View (spheres, rainbow, N blue to C red):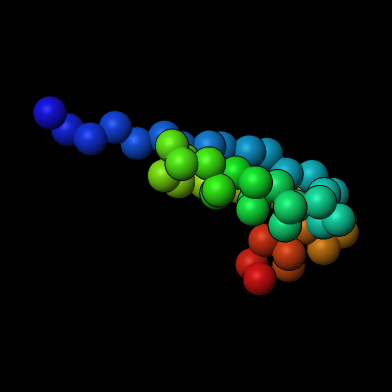
Length: 52
């Protein structure tokens, strides 16, 4: 039997102030294997925060 994987997919728009906390909270979940963040053209530092 193949192992199951849980992906979390989240759209991000101007959430630079909270994105790091969101990432940490998602990745600490024991069943989460992958996190995919999709920036929707943020005009703040969301992308820079995701990349750090």
